Image 1 (cartoon, each protein chain N blue to C red):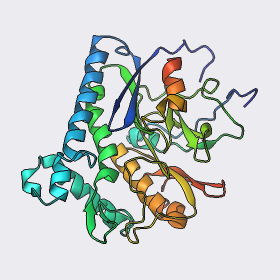
Image 2: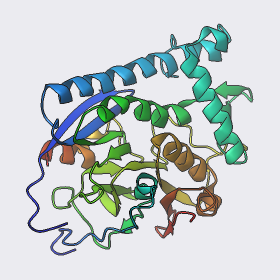
Image 3: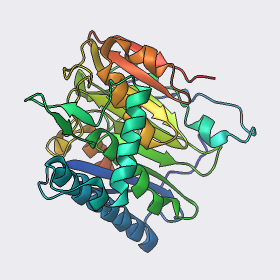
Image 4: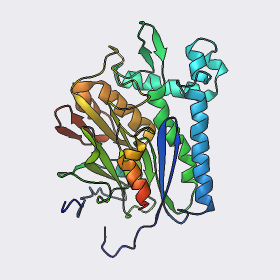
Length: 260
Length: 70
């Protein structure tokens, strides 16, 4: 970062959906004009539609109705099948620690694709931002985010990783030009942070942050690694193209470097 | 870090020009911070964390960044 670099003009937008704040930062040609406003409206429109289809908090969502056995997959919008396919791929990749079919309190299996939906939805919503010419973005949904920097020599987005022991502090900074960062931990609303093999919460790990090209997989891998508890860092090291940070219960950390 | 301000964030640099720039750019490594930082003083654009919900938003570091409008 050069000292002679001009002051950054970053525009910011915030709205809430799915119980999460959605924060957008834009810089460049369309940071703060009508095109930016239209793209932001499109982002929020996509997220609200995803919520209507997938929310497990809404009794009338397609996923809730399918979970109660009232409708079949064939009755749902095609995106539901896409998300369940992703969930199955994540289950295989994680040896079953991650699953969209979780053991319920009464022993029956509960369909909950929330662990896939968030990252997938934000990646999908960011399509409206990718259409903005000469404009960089960083779009976050409740702490999981995707960003773009068009100039390969430009300033990366500086992503602060929250300290799981004290959310008023940053533990690390990730400089990301183009890519995604997701963090899973104990306080994640709407996400059942259990090891799907046992139905029990993992032990030993406080949070897992994953950097990947797509937010869909950064989010899935952060959740899967967290669910593995003590195996989190070792598993993440096997994942192609991922890097990250595992924070353990005792406050120590392991930085995971990408597989070359 | 000096007086609570990040004065130098080391940015991991990777070789360019091999046709996989975007993919490699996504492989940024987290750089640990050794001291307590406040959002207002840190050169940070966005927060990744597990506790950012609508309920806790107003108290969150992300909220401070959004309000600062930097």
